[in-house]
Image (cartoon, rainbow, N blue to C red; front, side, top):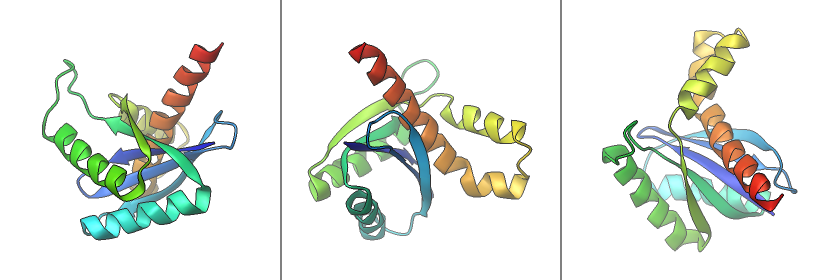
Length: 140
């Protein structure tokens, strides 16, 4: 079963997908948001191509654990994705995922321009890998 990870932002959606065994997350793309219809169409293409059966979305909590406008945006798009696809969506705490992705790219000496291109996709990888690791630990 493949699982898709999403880092949903105002202007972009970072997308990652797990391997067939659900052990590792790979970055797929960054969707540059244009409209709800466009965003959903792009997500549905990826869901079909990778035969995704479940979706993990980064849940943007504030550092004190409260929700804010970002969480409301994620909740809204998540509801639309469920309506369009019927797939289950799991919320995963994404605090520090973008910071971790940035740190990884900096350690890899990736240029600022290239970091900007891939940061959302990398954040989706961190979100999905965190979920996969947590899920694997529960099964042991």
